[in-house]
Image 1 (tube, one colour):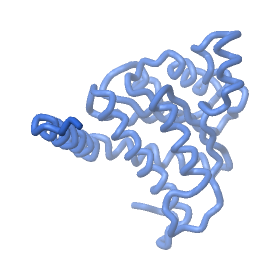
Image 2 (image 1 turned 60 degrees about the vertical axis):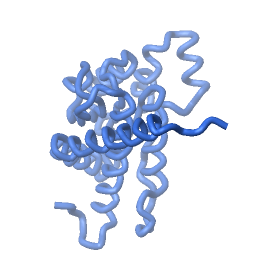
Image 3 (image 1 turned 180 degrees about the horizontal axis):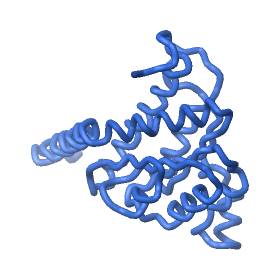
Length: 204
């Protein structure tokens, strides 16, 4: 059995430290955009509307994870009803039919057009900020008077398209994704505290 060498140990330590440093930069650089995004989600739910979430690959998993936290529960100290959130990444029949018959680029755009209504919110997740199916979904949302939040990295077209953009200050995919899931948990927790926290409907 091959042993983990000291070189490997150093690699693991470096990766963990680098990831933590990115999160520290998120805390410094993204605070206002995180609070703005939380407010937009609160406004959406308070008005009786829903949140739609989309992304590719790891960001598709994030979409499902975030929708699950909203519909189910994040902080178990709260007994609450579910928030209306949908991951546009989960219906394999829709995804494969549209990709096969009409092309992959519009798989999320089509669902935004079919399921969304004015006052809803689309959370679009792309580490590169340049995923074509994410960009066209955001464009469709804006045309339909649906608000948009972007979760992305430090570059790409997406950050300039969304109403609120949370841009992780990194270009390394895994560090962006690791920060995204932390941000998504924070957003869910802020929303829970707003609606169900003991101190009332405010985190400020």
